[in-house]
View 1: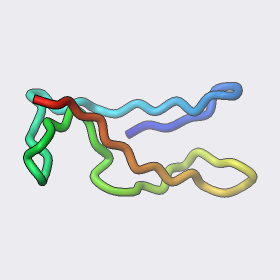
View 2: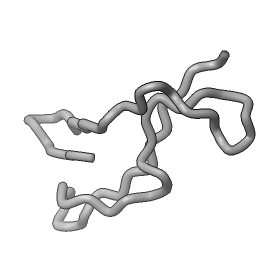
View 3: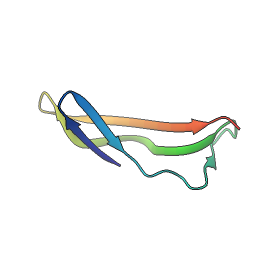
View 4: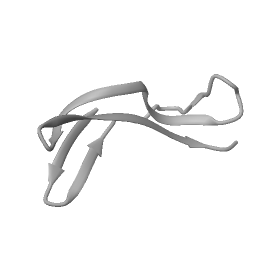
Length: 59
């Protein structure tokens, strides 16, 4: 996952699962995930941003 601040926007780039994989519960198909919270190198007020990202579709 790549994270950067461009102007007033937080830009997150993450690889997609191809094909999507079932979630742990099996209720959705995971398109992209950080697999938990990730501390990034992007900073706000001198502190690193932590991101937890899940992108999914409903089957």
